[in-house]
Length: 380
Length: 256
Image (cartoon, rainbow over all chains, first blue to last red; front, side, top):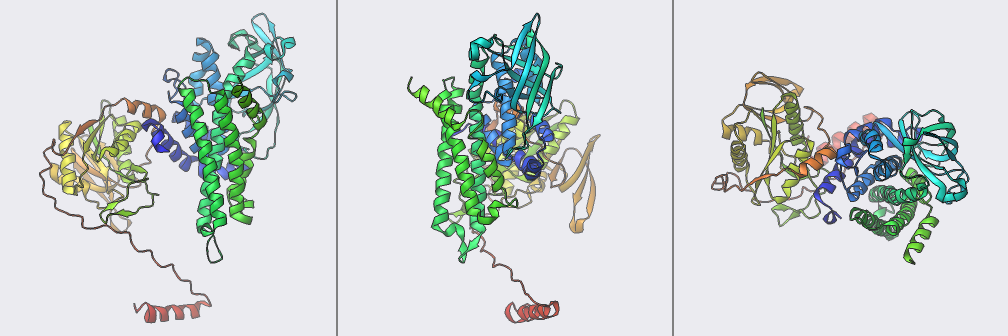
């Protein structure tokens, strides 16, 4: 699809592909098995500008568009899908929210270190009782003079406590207003009263470690309120529109990696006296995988392009995320089928793709929530 | 220092190549990259610039319009200027060396000129020496280590049998880089965005007065090598296997 891309977008993609081949792919399987947070890779990614791709150059960002971001993330995700979760959370949800809703002081304080990768951004909305339904939020933020006192437990936060964390936290400032009483805060390591709780043991994307976050009388300066009080839910939904392009891209990466592995295997694996790629049964699978992938890629490209053109893209990002995530599962499943018994072992990467694909239909809005967003936006 | 680096756009090392019309590589769908040996030259040039304040690195390529891509990548990696000698003709290495020499001179007096020891498309391996000849400069190719101090380039070049030859040359000189000289950096995103804003200087061979050169070499035809038959494994006890191998080499391969 090179004819759709600018020279800069292609150069960024090629750079990310080279970075992935040299720095990520060789260690991906081992890192993912160990569930080790990729500190070294993020540091190198930061040096190349990959931790601030879409942020303005004045804060040390790359000043690149969303299409370029999508291309780079897809290359990185082909090596290790976990990295796209970490980097998309960091860039779109954390740094992106500070850039969009923050004050000048907040931008000056956080964005340069986020763009360089010195600080790593996280996003914490989900709670035990508030998944798809943010109205179930319980974490409280009570104003006490110049500070907010935060209490509660957040669930499924992608972060590693050994990073210099910056967390966009959502908590209730007006509990009776439900989602209209949620505010967003910027939490960092200088604030006492928060810690990382239980670490989750997950089916896939293990390098992107996920934990509970526990807030016990955590004092947050009022200067760290993000945007206006009680507008947090709106900010979260806006951030997640962009986040969905990131997750769609992660899904595309898994789909593409599955297609490449399956194609390579089919060309080399011989049965019935010929490579199985010569069998129509396999060719049909390869055809369907490629068609689903291209359709998903184009949907994601459209969402990214609309974002770059300043258009509303909630519906299109939801479509991209819905389609790409289902394509990832489809392609990873077919890739295992083509590999046969070997595909079910750790000797080939496709079992990892299969596990990594599954989460993309769940986080940053389940497939069902995407359909809800698409339907509501299509009936307006 | 006024540093120059000559780079060539070649098909990606992983591309599967086919021939079109008996004389050309089919270009449709090919991915193009900087020839890997040229990347070592480029990295060495950028490192030299970083060591010597006030230096410039000018990347030069000879090739069709699409070759602009390698200059953008060179700029994104850290080159400060770029020159494109744009031509669709197939020039032989004498003509390419003449183009490069003229392009270098158009930018002033060089202190050092670097290039890959060979390009991975035609693998001629003559360009650094031809260029030195045209410009009447000392040269060393296959350079695996280099140090530039006080108007001297001290280099080590790989020679037969894994040995190394140490050479000292006065600047200006031409250096043909090989693998092992350094690890080329990635173009950074900041570099990519900066490269966008640099204007590439363009010439045609005619503007450099080199179009009238008679070609010294003509390409007659290009073909894909025949696929090699797969190797054969001779099974059995070593003593029997060796006997069988000798028989095959004598009776079938007829090499004994």
